[in-house]
Image 1 (cartoon, one colour):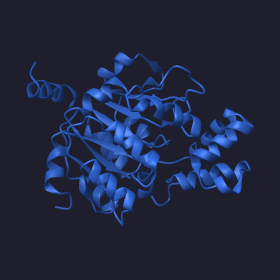
Image 2 (cartoon, rainbow, N blue to C red; image 1 turned 180 degrees about the vertical axis):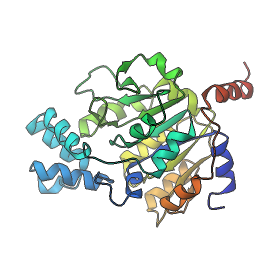
Image 3 (cartoon, rainbow, N blue to C red; image 1 turned 60 degrees about the vertical axis):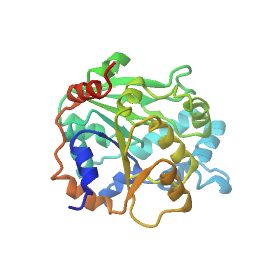
Amino acid sequence: MIIPSDLHEALTAGRLIPYIGPGVLALDPACPLPATPEALVSRLVEKVAVPHKIRGNLTAAAQFIENFKHRKTVSALMRDAFAVNAAPNALHDWLAASGLPLVVHAWYDDLLQSALKARGDDWGLVQAVSQAEHYGAWVHYFQHDGARADCAMGDLWATLVYEPLGALNPARNFLVSDSDFVEVLTEIDIQTPIPAQVQEWRRDRGFLFLGCRFTTQLERAFARQIMKRSRGPHWAVLPGTLTRNESRFLTEQSITPVPLDLAAFTEALADCKTVPHARDLAKGASSAANPA
């Protein structure tokens, strides 16, 4: 078995929350969407000149463009980078079919949404919004068709997708500039920006990181705070050599690295069947495990 047995068992039992990052896009070599922060910032600075010293820094470049060209320019550039015809890959399709109650999607594309639309209408989104555009709000909820929804709907959907960076669709909400992240990081330690359903569902579960790296402080901060107070255990599919900061972070957060190529791991998932649409079943199990 390619997938470690304890990871396989936790996943099939619905005890893990997939947390997918930009690297998931690289599963399709022909995917035209940027699959790394470096690839994304190169798209932004193709259209707007920024100082050389920040040309490789996504958040700083976005902040410069916001300051000197307006926030609408940032939004338009992000739209152009991700509003490109692309199809969900095998991992998106597996996640959509799995029926897992919560998936964290930490990148700006809408391919997981596209895969879920093929499943039906029993899912919805909770998506981070920028304080620059929606002052006083941290997230917006959306139904499967893109219509705004009340936060209470998040308790009813079979699958809730949490997008902590925003995404292209349905409303072009993007957290990408320095000021966007300063606002969130000021509050995230006390969990204010984290939706209530995410805080509830993570409590008795662990996380499975797919297509994520932890090389930057920002990547580590978001992962740390989103998995905060979760029971675990946690895994991260991380092929290749880990940086010193990544190794330290995995140890600090008790995340077990799985040194597998993501494509091979995804192929192995084809034989991994989860509890279908497990929200109600999992709630019952959670209540039994934590009696009043």
